Image (cartoon, rainbow, N blue to C red; front, side, top):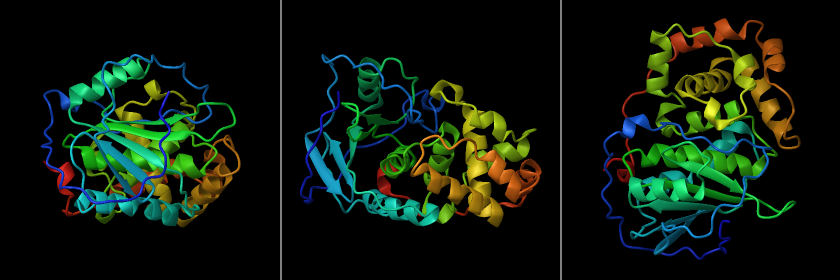
Length: 303
């Protein structure tokens, strides 16, 4: 079970001094880390005798997050300042109400420590660089929102991705797996990218990609989401938010329904009503989308 933490008073700390480099084989891990699908049966109680402990020597309260690390943390870090604005960005873009629910973020010092903890605590989950876990201790109670990751070179992307999952979970009854990952893929990008994932865009343009939202909407398990599914999920979300006004209206209406109904059915019928041929329209949008230029990066993610 996860530990429930009280609200903490924000304070200052020494600068973050942990060096972050990618270990060998990092590219074999998932670039986009999934959340547990909304509405699924809670996972069995994990073992209580973990030999790898969660980091917690230092903590930092920032916005609705509480960060825990065994290295000193400082609120002045550029990445923390950027993350502070993520909830408002998501709320503004998706027309969602604010959430004040605390999100606990555990930052392991190393990939080995993180993976050992996840392997022992959640052995049924596939290997990913980071995870968001919605933990319900008792039926009818509010979920604890927890993010686990490690201080690696992809920290900025991983935190934006997983915190997007957590922020959405705090205000919605549920989110279909593909949409959850597509939105996280959109908001994991720096604000200056306007949601464009350069790697996804380049791969989709060079491949014989055939959009199939009907198939994507049937996926309900994390293990079914491979690289191709993550790319397509991102593409549909970017098309809806940036490619077509009718598609955007359909998506925002769908998001509003998710505030009241964990399973409102597929998005595709409403999307087809707004865009008669959404597949070709998506391909045309990808062909016209511009790659983002360089943007400033938070130093935590660049070490």
